Image 1 (cartoon, rainbow, N blue to C red):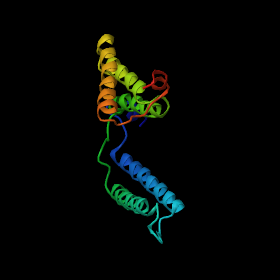
Image 2 (tube, rainbow, N blue to C red):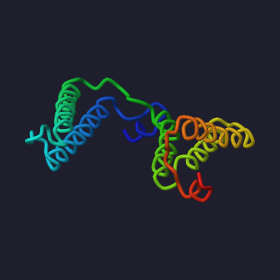
Image 3 (cartoon, rainbow, N blue to C red):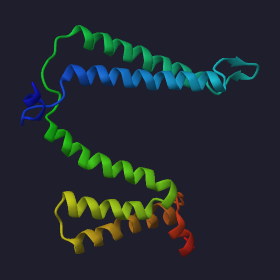
Image 4 (cartoon, rainbow, N blue to C red):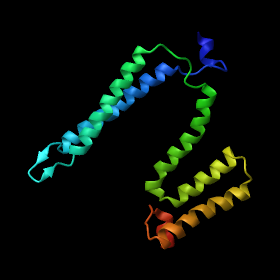
Length: 166
């Protein structure tokens, strides 16, 4: 049995992933409901309170999660969800993307975008560093000119933009 977890064809079972996903989405729904109750989910004198709509969204999430959980518990195991190697490939994209999103509030959108493009192009895409660097400079510059200057849509700024007066 130990060998099954480390073999080439091994990975998490479909049923286990479905049960885990149902439980996580139910937890998310419960958090939404709790937050809605805290801010007020009823009907006030001037109409619905701030948590009215989110409360029902959370309730729908919980009901759907419960349905998915019951279905997953009733069905027989249908095999692998994915092999460990496949999940590793997903994590190679998910982890840098998560770091990118986490950096945006602190560094603005441009520097993290530059870093993400360089990392993805050189590490995952196997492109040369000069091309990766050119694209990593060009893409944020394009979005700055297009969105911030042309359409006047402000994007998150960081300390570098403040130093440059952008």
